Length: 413
Ligand SMILES: [Zn+2]
Image 1 (cartoon, rainbow, N blue to C red):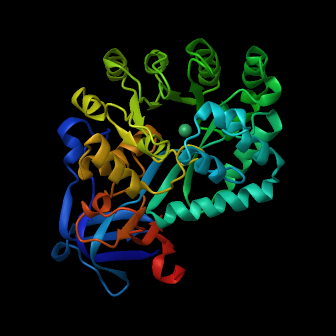
Image 2 (image 1 turned 180 degrees about the vertical axis):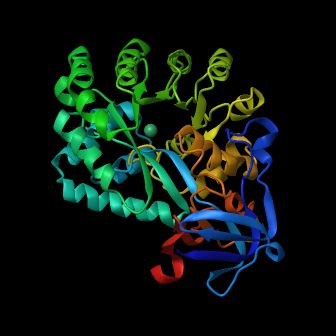
């Protein structure tokens, strides 16, 4: 039996509260304990409270947080972490004024990542994914949702899902995204590709996945196509997530509501009826401002309207090589604050407890409460607002998963 005691926290940010995601004014209620301490037994939180109320005996292994912020590890509910190569060339072209159609015509876009990912071995992809996993840890993230979607053939999608299953030491929730794009060899034959996804990929991907996702866009997979894939996934017992209304308002949010999806993600173009539909069906919006920022767009989702409507918003990185190449949740909190007027406390709720509920992990992670897993980070700041305020920094000093040290900035240096 191992007992760990964390003390000297300027703020112990617990996010304690009801066993459901936070909405409205609750998003600002982080349940911060000043000069807090936490007792951990066998990888789970046993007690939290003011320092003077937490008793530590001689057998307790004490960790001094050094007067810093201690909070739950971030839960990143939307990432694409398994891919080969990167798209720095496209990034440069975009900076020089190239449009997305021009980049796609030159062989760029998702399909260029698919080419390189197909050519990579499972070992090469695991090495890349492990490097990305380390980046998440350095930014205080302890759980990620991880999508396939750069294979787009039966064997390559399964290869990605096998790699996702091997990512350590992050806690990983796997999502099958075979309908991410129509691959080049199926150009003009979308219907045939859909059949492949539904009849051949899905049956073999389902045992390796917890969720199924579809890139639902009028010019990629319109709602009627997305519905077929997602209904088939539902019949196989998978939860549903959706890329919806990112490039135009194609009815993606309403489809997510119709199907009872766990989340509808992106939503840059979702209108008021779409927001109302998400509310009525208890679908959580996953907002991905990194993808708006990195594309140089100004079309941020209507976050304040969603909060006002009572939606349990989630913030995530959308980490991927094309449109959001960041693993940093603090960076996302910064963009959310400056571009979407999401207060730092609201951003922290959206990227911890609400994200955990969106993944079906609300009883296990996302807050520091007795019985939950001891997934937490010590950040080099005295006040949680600094996480969003300073930007472009790696603030995490130490990161723990199940009460085990998995990252230390000091050791890394
Ligand atoms: Zn995405």
